[in-house]
Image (cartoon, rainbow, N blue to C red; front, side, top):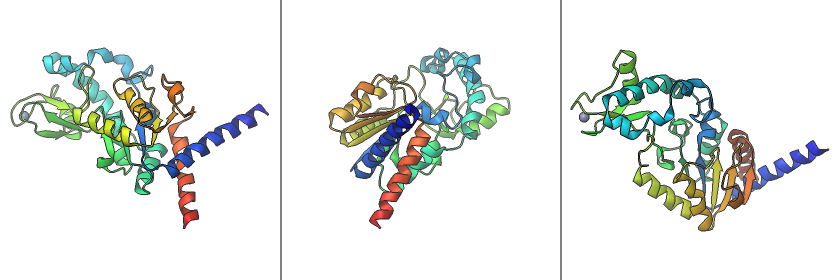
Length: 268
Ligand SMILES: [Zn+2]
C-alpha cells in the first residue's frame, strides 16, 4: 500500500515537472556531475576509481601555471581520465535536453560538466553555457593557439610528459577550469543573465555545493522563476525549491520529453 502511494506521489511530481516544461516561456536547466556520472564518468567526489590514485587538491591552477612538476602531474592525471570522458556516450538526460531545445521547450543549458556530452547529444554549442570549461579543448596561454585535447592526448601517448606550444613554446592548458582558477567571466555573466530571465529553472544532478555556481538557482528564484531540483541526494537549496525530485536525471527527463511530445501531438 505504501509502495503504491509512493509511486503515485513520484509520478505526480514527474507530471507536474512535465507540465511546467510545457507551459514555461523560458525554461532553463542547470546540470552537474550527476548527469555525467549517469554516462559512466567518475566524479572526483565519489570514492574509488581513478581519483583514488590522485589527490584533487594537488591539481590547482597555481600548481599548473607555477611549475613544470605541477603540469607533469596534471598531465599524468589527464592521461588517465581523458579516455574515460572520450569513451562516454550521452545518456537519456542529454538526449532529452537536446530534443526539448529542438522543440522550442528549452532556452539553454548551464552546466558544471566539462565532458562535451550536451553538445555530442545534439544541443547546439550556443545553447550550452559551460561554467567549468570543456575538457576536449586546450590552448597556449602565451599565444592563444588552440589545440584539440585529442591531439594532446596522442602526444602524451607518444611519451611527451608536458605538452608545450608548437608555435611559441608556451604553456598549453586544457580549457577545463582548475581548482583555484576563476570561472570564465563571460560564461558566468551570461548564466546570471539567463537565470534572471528564466521562468522555470531546473537543477539536474547537482549537489549545489560549488559556489558561485550554486547561487544561480537563487538568482532565478528571486527573479520570479519556478525552481525545481532533481538530484539523488538532498541539496542545501531544497528548502527554496518549489518542487524536489529525488530521482535520476535521465529517468526524469525522458518522462518530461514524452509528456511534451504528447502535448505537441494533441495540439496537432
Ligand atoms: Zn603558443
